[in-house]
Amino acid sequence: MPDIQTTTSRLGRRVVLYLVVAVGAVLMLFPFLWTVITSITPSGTLSSGPSLVVEDPTLDAYRELFGVMPVWRIVGNSFGVAVATTVLQLITSSMAAYAFARLPFRGRNVVFAVYLATLMIPLQVLVVPLFIEMTRLQLNDTYFALLAPTIASAFGVFLLKQAMEGVPRELDEAATIDGAGHLRIFSTIMLPLVRPSLATLAVFAFMSSWNSFLWPLVVIRSPELMTLPLGLATLRGQFTTEWDVVMAGAVVSIIPIALLYLVAQRHIIAGMAHTGIK
Amino acid sequence: MSASTAPSLAPRATVDTAVGRARRGPASRRRGLKHAGWVLLFLLPSAIPLIAFVLVPMVGSAWVSLHRWNLISGMEWVGLDNYAKLLGDPTTRKVFGNTLMYIAGYLPLVYVGGLGLALLLNQAFRGRSFFRAAYFLPVVTSWVVVALVWQWLLNPSNGLVNQALGAIGLPEPGWWTDPTWALPSVVLASAWKDLGFVMVILLAGLQAIPGDVMEAARMDGANAWQRFRSITLPLLSPSTFFVVVISLVNGFQVFDQVYVMTGGGPSGASQVVVGQIYDLTFRYGRAGEASALSWLLFALILGVTAFQLHGQKRWVNHA
Image (cartoon, rainbow over all chains, first blue to last red; front, side, top):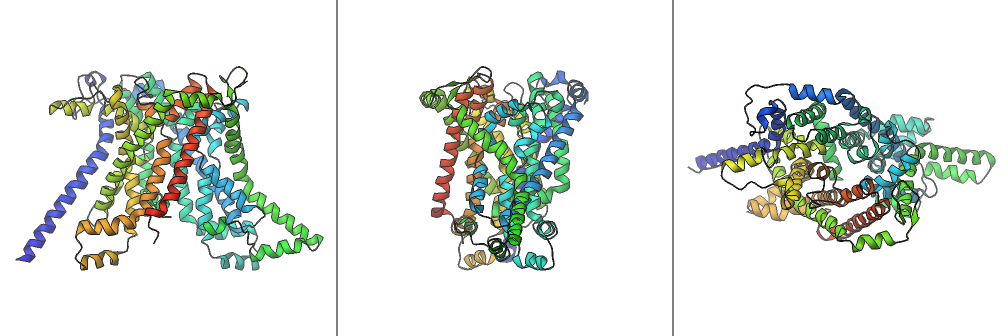
């Protein structure tokens, strides 16, 4: 008798578990579905209240979107800037991390403390003076201005220094005896051994660049240089009541990152979790 | 980390000899210079941008905060007047208050929600990785997209949420167009976006809890709630600490979703500190005050972080 009881209670718990996670999934995924539905709903029917079933779906909103904005260019900008930021941060951070982990020099701890201090300063606090600096340098409204504040990342240096300090010293000492210089040790021993941390940094750099809004908002004026968040916010300003067009813009900006997420899902989640443990 | 930042610079074997030789003769001095060259080569690619785009604007910001300046005409020295003005201005209190309200609404929502999801996903069941991926999708979506989607969902007249509320006879709030509901609307959208992130951090923490500890408690007859209270929560405290620190720092810097969803309105009802910095600079041409406000915010973030790092000994379990 107790056997049946435990099986039924286990089955019951299973059902409740699935019910709860399914409700959660609906709550998390439905807004995306709703965005797509809205974007293909004829604009006339939106004001009367939206419906889940679209009577006669249309791509008018997308036509209008591509008519008012250089959409492909903007998607390209977002990708280009995010990839450039990621590559630059990987290079600058890993090199600095190597110096802090393996090249003793006088005042190293002071220099590292200054690096850590910059980690505490949010870009938000620097936006006004950075804008002034870019204006002085006549770099406003350029790709360089978009990249400038994120070429180096103290977070990246910190993360990779921790990882490199975990690499056994015997490995590079052996390489030194074999006649390897710093560049060889750095590129053939260190970098391959800290790959998980490099992946974490890459995920963070790419996502924060992809999502960045305040700095582009401040420094970019030309539509040809806009990134997706800025383009979308501009679109919202122009189409205050045409939600089908705004949602079409949202769909266009979700698709690339969602595809990337589908492909690299495990790495992205692992990368995020990685930062939480240490 | 503590060992490497300790003030004593214990030189390591290989370079120790290089430095030692540098004092002895010209050939060794050349080697010392070469070592300095390597240090510069590895450090400058990050040091130059950090100096140019963090430290210089930092100092510049302090300088600007002591002036009255509209970004166009000349700067006028006012000393600490901007700070005095801000501290006496009810708007300053309002924007800091709103920022704290945002955090007070957001943090419990994402923590409790994220912990709930993490506990669910910490059990073995089919389709678990699908659900984990689904919950995480909003995390990779940009703030602007999230803000727009929620602005549409929470549209007072024909948004889906109010349609649903109306259909079951509940009151339909004005959401982001209503002073009382504007900030809660932003909190809701923000929590929805970050829930998956918190879940992943806490899930990693849960999975690090050794199974035999749990098993031993079960043997001793501890029920599920007792196990949660006296094993899971304490052993999860490092992850909890991380979530709290990150959420607070991000919370103080909240801007994108507010700017897009409410623009700080209606009439300042949901304005936050960074939004005020932006408006002061680019709408009202008061760059001096904006810089002073940046410094106040920075001081607050530093203070809160220091307080947390200090306080963590009391409740964070570093087993």
